[in-house]
Image (cartoon, rainbow, N blue to C red; front, top):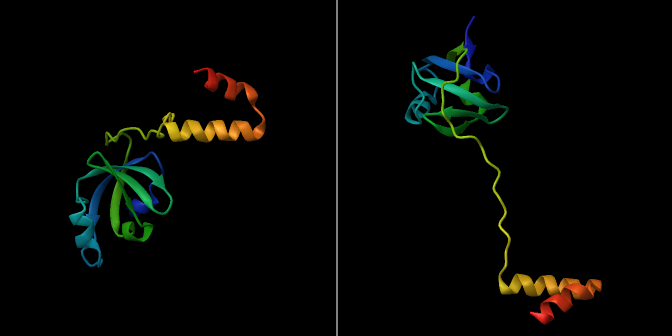
Length: 119
């Protein structure tokens, strides 16, 4: 029984065995870096399917991977960096401080206004 890349679950690794050349998008898949013998890790198994390809996250529509036959592996193949949530930096620009003071005054926060007025 053939296993196809769109059937591999999140966190699993697979080795590409064959890309059906009769499939209209096979040239596009090859141009994007998919080829026989390549080991890929499935990062998300929804639609799109996101895989780790040569150390980079690449998303494919699920139907594009229906003709890519694979064999599941037990090892981790890719070294994609862990996805980090962006950190929000505190905005201390003058306009932002003025907005915060204006908001505090409307809310009746006298202590904030007093501390800024003393500075």
